[in-house]
Image (cartoon, rainbow, N blue to C red; front, top):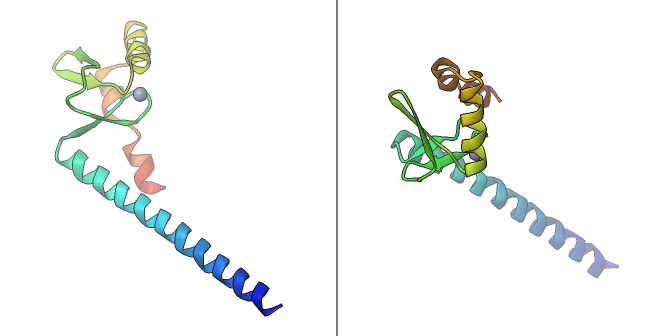
Length: 103
Ligand SMILES: [Zn+2]
C-alpha cells in the first residue's frame, strides 16, 4: 500500500517537474525569439505569422519593402492577395503583434 502511495507521489512530482520544465523552455524560446526579432535576424511571415530568418530565399519585394515567407505556399498566397489587391502596404504593416501582446 505504501509503495503504491510513494510511487504515485514520485510520479506526480516527475510530472510536475516535466511540465514546469516545458513551460520554462517555452518561455525561454519566446524570449529568444523576441531578442532575435529585435536584432533584426527574424521577420514575420505576413501570411501565417511565423518568424522566418531574414536570409531566407523565399521573398517578395513590394515597393521598398521585402516580405519574407516560411514557405512557397505562403509566398504564393501573398502574391495572389497582392494581385487581388487584398493586401496594401498599410495592411501588411499592422500584423498580429498587438493581439499577441494582449493575450
Ligand atoms: Zn508562412
